Image 1 (tube, rainbow, N blue to C red):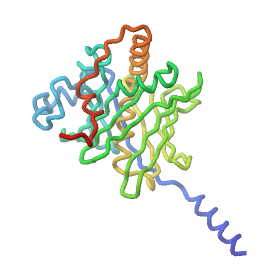
Image 2 (spheres, rainbow, N blue to C red; image 1 turned 180 degrees about the vertical axis):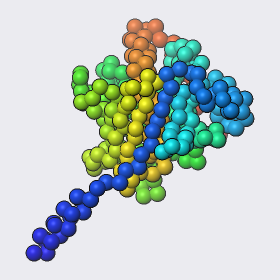
Image 3 (cartoon, rainbow, N blue to C red; image 1 turned 60 degrees about the vertical axis):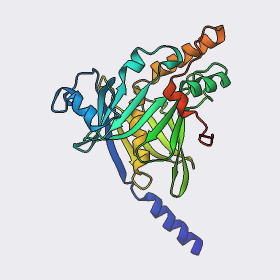
Length: 268
Protein backbone atom coordinates (compact mmCIF):
# COMPACT_ATOMS: atom_id res chain seq x y z
CA UNK A 1 0.00 0.00 0.00
CA UNK A 2 2.80 2.40 0.89
CA UNK A 3 4.50 1.62 -2.44
CA UNK A 4 1.26 2.21 -4.35
CA UNK A 5 0.76 5.51 -2.56
CA UNK A 6 4.30 6.61 -3.35
CA UNK A 7 3.84 5.61 -6.99
CA UNK A 8 0.60 7.55 -7.23
CA UNK A 9 2.26 10.56 -5.63
CA UNK A 10 5.15 10.33 -8.10
CA UNK A 11 2.75 10.10 -11.04
CA UNK A 12 0.95 13.22 -9.87
CA UNK A 13 4.27 14.99 -9.46
CA UNK A 14 5.39 14.02 -12.96
CA UNK A 15 2.08 15.22 -14.38
CA UNK A 16 2.63 18.78 -13.19
CA UNK A 17 3.17 21.19 -16.09
CA UNK A 18 6.73 22.32 -16.71
CA UNK A 19 7.51 25.97 -16.14
CA UNK A 20 9.67 27.32 -18.94
CA UNK A 21 12.32 30.01 -19.07
CA UNK A 22 12.03 31.69 -22.48
CA UNK A 23 14.11 34.12 -24.51
CA UNK A 24 14.65 34.92 -28.18
CA UNK A 25 17.84 35.24 -30.23
CA UNK A 26 17.34 37.49 -33.29
CA UNK A 27 20.02 37.73 -35.97
CA UNK A 28 19.77 40.29 -38.75
CA UNK A 29 20.14 39.44 -42.43
CA UNK A 30 22.44 42.42 -43.10
CA UNK A 31 25.01 44.38 -41.14
CA UNK A 32 22.80 47.51 -41.22
CA UNK A 33 20.54 47.66 -38.15
CA UNK A 34 18.94 50.18 -35.82
CA UNK A 35 21.31 49.37 -32.98
CA UNK A 36 24.41 50.38 -34.93
CA UNK A 37 23.06 53.36 -36.89
CA UNK A 38 20.85 54.71 -34.11
CA UNK A 39 21.69 56.19 -30.73
CA UNK A 40 24.57 53.78 -30.06
CA UNK A 41 27.44 54.80 -32.33
CA UNK A 42 30.50 52.68 -33.09
CA UNK A 43 32.80 54.88 -31.00
CA UNK A 44 30.41 54.61 -28.06
CA UNK A 45 30.56 50.83 -28.31
CA UNK A 46 34.34 50.96 -28.16
CA UNK A 47 34.27 53.29 -25.17
CA UNK A 48 31.81 51.09 -23.28
CA UNK A 49 33.91 47.92 -23.62
CA UNK A 50 37.47 47.25 -24.73
CA UNK A 51 36.12 43.89 -25.95
CA UNK A 52 34.30 45.73 -28.75
CA UNK A 53 37.25 46.02 -31.14
CA UNK A 54 37.37 48.05 -34.35
CA UNK A 55 36.60 45.03 -36.54
CA UNK A 56 33.44 44.11 -34.60
CA UNK A 57 30.11 44.07 -36.45
CA UNK A 58 26.77 43.90 -34.64
CA UNK A 59 24.60 41.13 -36.08
CA UNK A 60 21.77 40.55 -33.62
CA UNK A 61 20.17 40.79 -30.23
CA UNK A 62 18.77 38.74 -27.36
CA UNK A 63 15.23 39.58 -26.26
CA UNK A 64 13.81 38.66 -22.88
CA UNK A 65 10.11 39.23 -23.31
CA UNK A 66 9.73 42.73 -24.75
CA UNK A 67 13.10 43.89 -23.44
CA UNK A 68 16.41 43.66 -25.24
CA UNK A 69 18.84 42.00 -22.83
CA UNK A 70 21.84 41.40 -25.07
CA UNK A 71 23.64 42.50 -28.24
CA UNK A 72 25.50 40.04 -30.49
CA UNK A 73 28.52 40.83 -32.64
CA UNK A 74 31.38 39.13 -34.45
CA UNK A 75 34.89 40.00 -35.62
CA UNK A 76 34.07 40.56 -39.27
CA UNK A 77 37.56 41.05 -40.70
CA UNK A 78 38.99 38.00 -38.94
CA UNK A 79 36.26 35.81 -40.46
CA UNK A 80 35.86 37.46 -43.86
CA UNK A 81 39.50 38.23 -44.63
CA UNK A 82 41.47 35.72 -42.56
CA UNK A 83 43.28 32.92 -44.38
CA UNK A 84 44.16 29.33 -43.57
CA UNK A 85 44.21 28.29 -39.94
CA UNK A 86 44.29 31.95 -38.92
CA UNK A 87 40.78 32.47 -40.28
CA UNK A 88 38.57 32.13 -37.23
CA UNK A 89 35.04 32.82 -36.11
CA UNK A 90 34.89 34.98 -32.97
CA UNK A 91 31.45 35.87 -31.57
CA UNK A 92 30.79 38.18 -28.64
CA UNK A 93 27.80 38.89 -26.42
CA UNK A 94 27.30 42.27 -24.76
CA UNK A 95 24.68 43.63 -22.40
CA UNK A 96 22.28 46.35 -23.51
CA UNK A 97 24.76 48.84 -22.02
CA UNK A 98 27.54 47.28 -24.14
CA UNK A 99 29.32 45.57 -21.25
CA UNK A 100 31.04 42.35 -22.33
CA UNK A 101 29.32 39.13 -21.23
CA UNK A 102 31.01 36.40 -23.23
CA UNK A 103 33.08 35.27 -26.22
CA UNK A 104 32.77 32.15 -28.37
CA UNK A 105 35.69 31.22 -30.63
CA UNK A 106 36.22 28.60 -33.30
CA UNK A 107 39.37 26.68 -32.28
CA UNK A 108 41.04 25.61 -35.51
CA UNK A 109 43.78 23.54 -33.87
CA UNK A 110 41.33 21.52 -31.80
CA UNK A 111 38.87 21.26 -34.73
CA UNK A 112 41.54 19.82 -37.02
CA UNK A 113 42.74 17.43 -34.31
CA UNK A 114 39.23 16.03 -33.85
CA UNK A 115 38.68 15.91 -37.62
CA UNK A 116 41.88 13.91 -38.15
CA UNK A 117 40.76 11.53 -35.40
CA UNK A 118 37.33 11.21 -37.04
CA UNK A 119 38.90 10.06 -40.31
CA UNK A 120 38.16 13.23 -42.25
CA UNK A 121 34.73 14.18 -40.88
CA UNK A 122 34.86 17.93 -40.15
CA UNK A 123 34.42 18.36 -36.41
CA UNK A 124 34.15 21.96 -35.24
CA UNK A 125 35.27 22.85 -31.72
CA UNK A 126 34.57 26.08 -29.87
CA UNK A 127 35.81 27.67 -26.68
CA UNK A 128 33.63 29.99 -24.58
CA UNK A 129 34.91 32.59 -22.15
CA UNK A 130 32.14 34.02 -19.97
CA UNK A 131 32.42 37.19 -17.90
CA UNK A 132 33.42 36.70 -14.25
CA UNK A 133 33.93 32.94 -14.72
CA UNK A 134 37.14 30.93 -14.32
CA UNK A 135 36.14 28.05 -16.61
CA UNK A 136 36.67 28.05 -20.36
CA UNK A 137 33.67 26.09 -21.63
CA UNK A 138 34.46 23.76 -24.53
CA UNK A 139 31.58 23.10 -26.94
CA UNK A 140 32.29 20.51 -29.63
CA UNK A 141 30.49 18.84 -32.48
CA UNK A 142 30.24 15.07 -32.11
CA UNK A 143 32.66 13.09 -34.28
CA UNK A 144 30.31 10.10 -34.08
CA UNK A 145 27.92 10.88 -36.93
CA UNK A 146 26.48 8.74 -39.72
CA UNK A 147 25.35 10.33 -43.01
CA UNK A 148 21.86 11.91 -42.78
CA UNK A 149 21.81 11.48 -39.00
CA UNK A 150 21.29 14.65 -36.92
CA UNK A 151 24.39 16.45 -35.70
CA UNK A 152 25.10 16.74 -31.99
CA UNK A 153 27.14 19.07 -29.83
CA UNK A 154 28.19 18.63 -26.21
CA UNK A 155 29.60 20.78 -23.42
CA UNK A 156 29.81 20.91 -19.65
CA UNK A 157 29.57 23.70 -17.09
CA UNK A 158 31.33 23.54 -13.74
CA UNK A 159 28.90 24.76 -11.08
CA UNK A 160 28.92 25.10 -7.30
CA UNK A 161 27.28 21.66 -7.21
CA UNK A 162 29.81 20.08 -9.54
CA UNK A 163 30.05 19.63 -13.33
CA UNK A 164 26.83 19.47 -15.33
CA UNK A 165 26.97 17.86 -18.76
CA UNK A 166 24.75 18.69 -21.75
CA UNK A 167 24.02 17.54 -25.27
CA UNK A 168 22.41 19.54 -28.09
CA UNK A 169 20.88 17.42 -30.84
CA UNK A 170 19.44 18.70 -34.08
CA UNK A 171 15.85 17.60 -34.57
CA UNK A 172 15.29 14.96 -37.25
CA UNK A 173 11.93 16.38 -38.30
CA UNK A 174 11.81 20.06 -39.23
CA UNK A 175 12.89 22.38 -42.02
CA UNK A 176 14.83 24.75 -39.78
CA UNK A 177 17.84 24.40 -37.51
CA UNK A 178 15.84 23.19 -34.52
CA UNK A 179 17.73 21.63 -31.60
CA UNK A 180 16.82 19.86 -28.37
CA UNK A 181 18.79 20.21 -25.14
CA UNK A 182 19.40 17.12 -23.00
CA UNK A 183 21.05 16.79 -19.59
CA UNK A 184 23.47 14.03 -18.57
CA UNK A 185 20.57 11.79 -17.49
CA UNK A 186 19.16 11.87 -21.01
CA UNK A 187 16.22 14.10 -20.10
CA UNK A 188 15.07 16.72 -22.58
CA UNK A 189 15.18 19.99 -20.66
CA UNK A 190 15.01 22.55 -23.44
CA UNK A 191 14.46 23.38 -27.10
CA UNK A 192 15.82 25.82 -29.68
CA UNK A 193 13.05 26.57 -32.17
CA UNK A 194 14.36 28.08 -35.42
CA UNK A 195 12.07 30.61 -37.09
CA UNK A 196 13.07 30.53 -40.77
CA UNK A 197 10.86 33.50 -41.66
CA UNK A 198 13.73 35.66 -40.37
CA UNK A 199 16.41 35.59 -43.09
CA UNK A 200 19.18 36.34 -40.63
CA UNK A 201 18.10 33.62 -38.24
CA UNK A 202 15.83 33.66 -35.20
CA UNK A 203 15.48 31.15 -32.36
CA UNK A 204 12.92 30.88 -29.59
CA UNK A 205 14.73 29.17 -26.71
CA UNK A 206 12.86 27.33 -23.95
CA UNK A 207 14.59 25.80 -20.92
CA UNK A 208 12.98 24.03 -17.99
CA UNK A 209 12.93 26.78 -15.35
CA UNK A 210 14.04 24.30 -12.68
CA UNK A 211 17.16 23.48 -14.75
CA UNK A 212 17.97 26.96 -16.05
CA UNK A 213 20.68 29.29 -14.74
CA UNK A 214 22.60 32.27 -16.10
CA UNK A 215 25.69 30.47 -17.44
CA UNK A 216 23.59 27.89 -19.30
CA UNK A 217 21.44 30.61 -20.85
CA UNK A 218 24.54 32.50 -22.02
CA UNK A 219 25.93 29.35 -23.65
CA UNK A 220 22.64 28.76 -25.48
CA UNK A 221 22.45 32.37 -26.66
CA UNK A 222 25.92 32.14 -28.15
CA UNK A 223 25.24 28.69 -29.61
CA UNK A 224 22.23 30.09 -31.49
CA UNK A 225 24.45 32.86 -32.85
CA UNK A 226 27.03 30.30 -33.97
CA UNK A 227 24.36 28.39 -35.92
CA UNK A 228 24.25 31.23 -38.44
CA UNK A 229 27.88 30.33 -39.30
CA UNK A 230 27.66 26.60 -38.64
CA UNK A 231 27.80 25.43 -42.25
CA UNK A 232 30.54 27.85 -43.39
CA UNK A 233 32.63 27.05 -40.30
CA UNK A 234 32.37 23.32 -40.97
CA UNK A 235 33.35 23.82 -44.61
CA UNK A 236 36.32 25.92 -43.53
CA UNK A 237 37.52 23.10 -41.28
CA UNK A 238 37.05 20.62 -44.15
CA UNK A 239 39.11 22.74 -46.55
CA UNK A 240 41.96 23.10 -44.07
CA UNK A 241 41.85 19.36 -43.42
CA UNK A 242 42.15 18.69 -47.15
CA UNK A 243 45.17 21.01 -47.33
CA UNK A 244 46.79 19.03 -44.53
CA UNK A 245 46.30 15.78 -46.43
CA UNK A 246 47.91 17.07 -49.61
CA UNK A 247 50.72 18.89 -47.84
CA UNK A 248 49.65 22.42 -48.81
CA UNK A 249 48.56 23.69 -45.41
CA UNK A 250 50.17 26.76 -43.85
CA UNK A 251 50.76 25.43 -40.34
CA UNK A 252 50.25 28.63 -38.36
CA UNK A 253 47.57 29.28 -35.75
CA UNK A 254 46.25 32.69 -34.75
CA UNK A 255 48.20 34.01 -31.75
CA UNK A 256 45.10 34.53 -29.63
CA UNK A 257 44.08 30.92 -30.25
CA UNK A 258 47.58 29.71 -29.40
CA UNK A 259 47.36 31.52 -26.07
CA UNK A 260 44.26 29.49 -25.18
CA UNK A 261 46.29 26.27 -25.50
CA UNK A 262 49.07 27.39 -23.14
CA UNK A 263 49.84 25.26 -20.09
CA UNK A 264 48.40 27.12 -17.05
CA UNK A 265 50.99 25.40 -14.82
CA UNK A 266 54.00 26.44 -16.85
CA UNK A 267 56.76 28.42 -15.18
CA UNK A 268 56.37 32.12 -15.83
